[in-house]
Amino acid sequence: MRLQHGFSLIEVLITLLVLKVGLLGLLAAQTLSLRQLQDAIQRTQAVAMSNALFNEIWANPRLADAIAPQITLQFEPLTTPVCSQNTPCNAQQLAIVQLNSWFETLQALSSTLHQPVFCFQSQANTAQLQVSWQQRSANSAPQLASCDASAGRGAFAVQGGAW
Image (tube, rainbow, N blue to C red):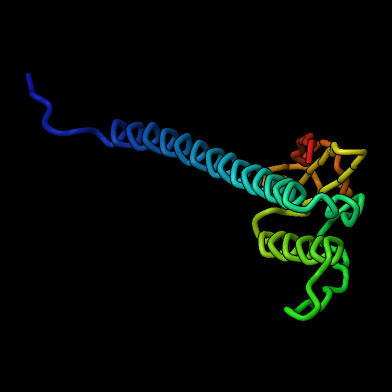
């Protein structure tokens, strides 16, 4: 009886096939985790921008009057007033400065927060802010920019008040 030394070619090929299937599974899991990470980053940035806007409103309630009902990256900022020590800004002018500053920050995030839409409604001392964005991991075609959640768009709403 002969003892076998080494592996046959069939055994090597089957081993390579099993290894290949395992590596493809790992690659698919890595791709899925990257998509989920991108969505988490977008949600975090949308929450941060919403929080920043509410903080600005709490600092200056007149800002609630200056905010447009819908803000997208195509929003036209208001003309920034010129204020100085001799002619200080009033609350309304300061609100315009705050809104323009917030919008500049939003524009800076446009590379990671894709097609954001902020819808603002204010009544008395309460406000509601709806936010949506195009998810990069979505397999569907980009949707029209609206504040509603739809296929391929992430969204949430925030309510605040008592300023």
